[in-house]
Image (cartoon, rainbow, N blue to C red; front, side, top):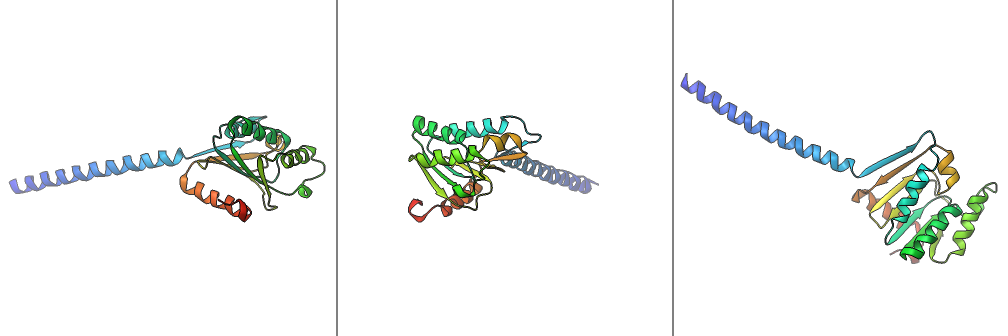
Length: 189
């Protein structure tokens, strides 16, 4: 009988140790989930909420400290003026990749004006790539915004859009490499 009691006590001790180990693993997994969840933020504009996406993107751009890399099919004069403003106030480096002017619909004067404003500003490095279909903004190589449309107040306000903010280092490095590959060789660093 005493042998059985000692065996049961040993089993209880072993099970208690295993229980503590499993609780530690659960805590670690919960911490990992919270860490992953904190690396992504999703904004969906459905139905379109006037100015919500514009404000989010504007704040993101305005908070840039060193450099900003943008791929977007088109950009309107509102966002070009915002870029010029942050260059003047923060002296940051901006690279932007857009489609060519001939690809802009003629019934979109806001986009035509944005393109022309961009061309006139020599402080912004502007490169063409006609494959751009959505907007990617890399801020200070630390934060990334993915947007389902171009940088235009009209498109951001009047259509269903999503914006995903990411600060996961692995994904940032992949997008940074994609941005670099779209630049002409003399602009790559």
